[in-house]
Image 1 (cartoon, chains in turn purple, cyan):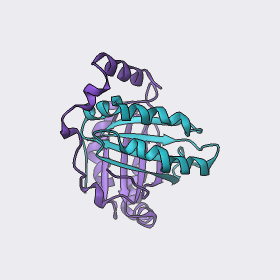
Image 2 (cartoon, chains in turn orange, blue):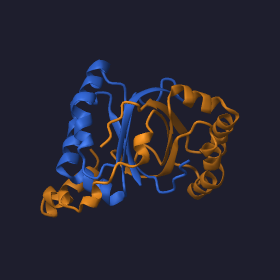
Image 3 (cartoon, helix red, strand yellow):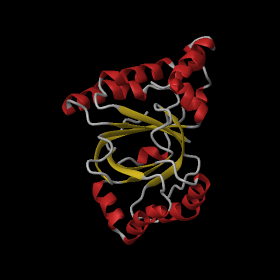
Image 4 (cartoon, chains in turn purple, blue):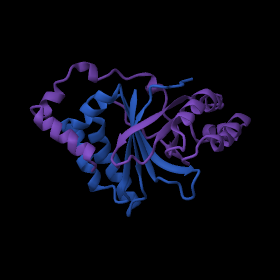
Length: 143
Length: 104
């Protein structure tokens, strides 16, 4: 595991043990959100570090995100910068998760004009490369 | 909101991985304090051939402190320590900011 995990363990021990952390307020135990109604399948996009970080972020927000958000059948769409992980540096620089009801909905969404436009747009800003994965996240385990 | 994305490589024994994940690892991960949602499942396609992952999980937390406290908790340490018991194809964890959401 990375130094990050080691640091976490050390911090927990120094802070008087993990019991101190587990005694944090109940607000950490958040209510089940609208997530419960979602699920299905997910498209995970992991972007490598771009040549120009600020240009990537600006382009993603102003141009790519609106294109992706228009894909038919999209149930939820989250994206943001990677700030840590098990590897040093982390195995990605930016990540997005798009959820759909099922495989058929995901495939139809990607094949639609909006989906094709979004996919083609990747070449305009993903200068650090991008890996897309389609995952069966229907076997969900929600709290 | 922030998320942990766990991308697992293809394991040596696929059936053993799936059985262990469902029976042992998922309950451990689901017990992490502060967890808001937890989705996991097989990767069945993507932009690469073969896809760059074989199994994936997404765990969401309210914010960075909640994620870090969750991983630092006994339950988080147990779930992290359990990875070595079944992730025979390796695993990459990444922590992502999802504050700039564009939810439909």
